[in-house]
Image (cartoon, rainbow, N blue to C red; front, side, top):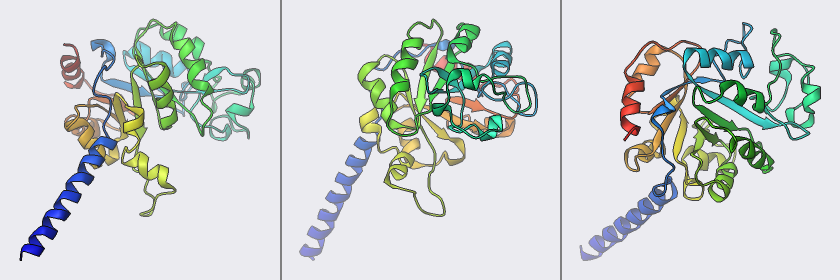
Length: 291
């Protein structure tokens, strides 16, 4: 009996140690956080207030203008052209949005300006003109599109944002981008983008397992977690918000009913495909971070 009890205690100790290690691995930034502004708001138009079947497609100047006019924050995607110009574009390839083969990073900015977005007359904007147009009127969530390990975008983007007077934060799926910000721009609010990367019960590689469960947080120390709202019950995401009081961002909310159902699980909401009705979400968020 004594031997059994000793065995149970040993297993319990191992289990407790594993839990502590897990909690340390997913710990976001706790100390010396950048100050949050009440003007951040709670509702962000995904890739601008866009409709790809109209003259205001995603990540276009028209979509960004519509978001500003409606008073919504803007979530936008940024990547570098071959000649090092930051442009707002989501896909790494041009096929879906421009109807031609090629990639952003193998095309010059001049070459890209010959293309239009879908059936509209809109062209791929450079970030400089987007920032000039927004001019701090609404807050921005800037997603860094970094496919592998080339972090050139971080420096070029941040040099531009250093001159910007408006409210913004950055986010990325790539933890290397957050590591860059942790080292060189600790004062900029940074967020880890993630989702449940399991496909047919499997992960493509160990990195996708780590990202799903936020196991890179110990290194990147994010100020917020932006998680696919369809997987809001993922334990790592919930622990970050409930235990560590980490800011929680939901992407991408597709309708009013879904938005209202997520109110208790997230703090900021990136929406798409509908116009949110007046809700108490914005007010609650401003009260929460305004102190």
